[in-house]
Length: 216
Image (tube, rainbow, N blue to C red; front, side):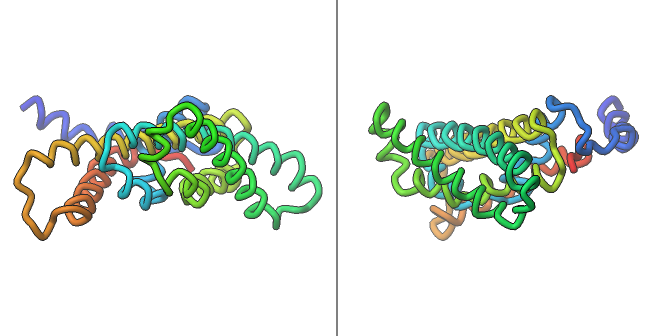
């Protein structure tokens, strides 16, 4: 009876939640970027490294932290460059190449830091560490914040939240894949097959948050 009342009341509850636009508080955008608008499971950006690195929990945490750092810094720098250089000079057509250069520079910086202080993690991440440069989630966040006319605080909140949301997704699936080592997975589904199914189920689970807070 109690569960039925809760289920029946959900549509009314969600209907009372207003759509969150560019005027939303940074904290709301931050939370929404992690759960309701997860850059990976809602927008399906950054799937390549998500599927490849999630075999190990430690490597997933390391890559998640690296992606979060790059997203945070590049969202701040790209917002500043766009607002104070590209738009005033009428150079909006250079947004793509400017954003990619900033992202590539920061990925190189992160790669040097990880190689210096954690060689084991550096070799575990392998080619996918420098490939953060072409992680479409990184560029996607910079483009979304421009399209949505975010302020600096909202852009940074969106960058940090998107990074943490991406890390949450990859660590979660890494934990599930670790548990599956002790399960009897059908032979044809071993490897990428069961991983794709897990990714789909996780996306369905995150769709349960859809409509609660919708950032535009």
